[in-house]
Image 1 (cartoon, rainbow, N blue to C red):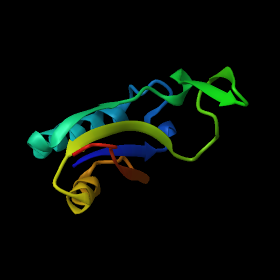
Image 2: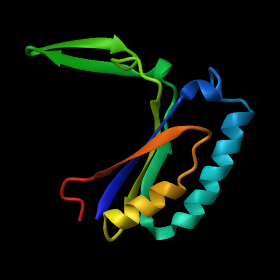
Image 3: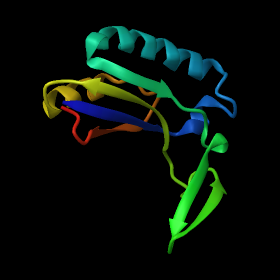
Image 4: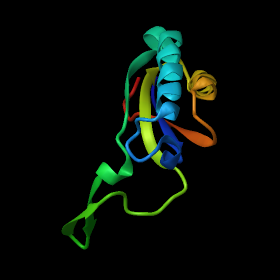
Length: 115
């Protein structure tokens, strides 16, 4: 079964351009995590900050374009992993090992038809 692990953290911890020591620390942890995942990892990537985001919103059939995410939140989507594991319990076990800098959350979502 395929699952998306969505990583939510406070992106301000990494600095305005994600180039400080905090990002170097977490990248090293993710490199080690990738090795540990092995064949279970199907894909994944980090994302640039929300300052680089663009949102297309549809309301009443009309589409509008906005800078950044729609809502202010304490945690922002910073990256994801796509994994292929036997079941939700295996996905949870992997998500518990996923490195985050400080506080954060990992949302686990099964893919439609992701068998």
